[in-house]
Structure formats: C-alpha cells, structure tokens
Image (cartoon, rainbow, N blue to C red; front, side, top):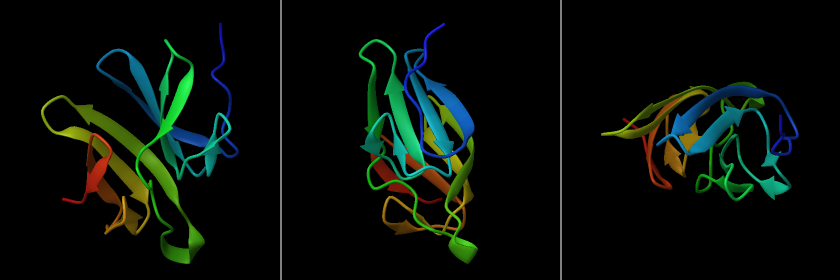
Length: 105
C-alpha cells in the first residue's frame, strides 16, 4: 500500500487516464499541498499532483463539487457534479476536459 497525499476535503469520484494517472474529484480546494479546485490528476510514477486548469467554480448555494468522472479515449475526461463554471466557462454541472482546456457540452 502507498498513499499519494491527501486532499483537504472529501474525494467523491476517480478515473484512470491511459492506465497511468489517476484523476480525483470532490469538494476539495487542495491536493498533495497544491491548489486544486475540485479536480486534480495524480501521477503515481512521479508522485506529483497536477490541477486541471482553473478547475471547477462554485455552484448553487456555494457548493463546488465533482461527483462523477468518466474518461473517454476519443473525447477526453467528462466531469459531472454541482458547479456552474468549469475551466472559466459557464456550465450546468457537466464539462468535458481535453488536456487542461475545459469546455462544456
């Protein structure tokens, strides 16, 4: 067993990318000691955490939470949850990440 370091709040979802990295989502603002607005990638080979751009913005009633992650090799990383902004783009709780550039469907 090994632990990659923690988040400052609960993790709600995770997905693997290309069988190498782990993406985690939740209601946190930091992971492994770096700022990470609710979604972050962990590389087990290096031990580094990498935020996804500007991450997820606050949603209704002051909630910012990623509740689902799904990786699609042809599309990117789908992110679902309670938020109104993803990567600086208005969203209704669903966003698609391609690399570190977010867009909403």
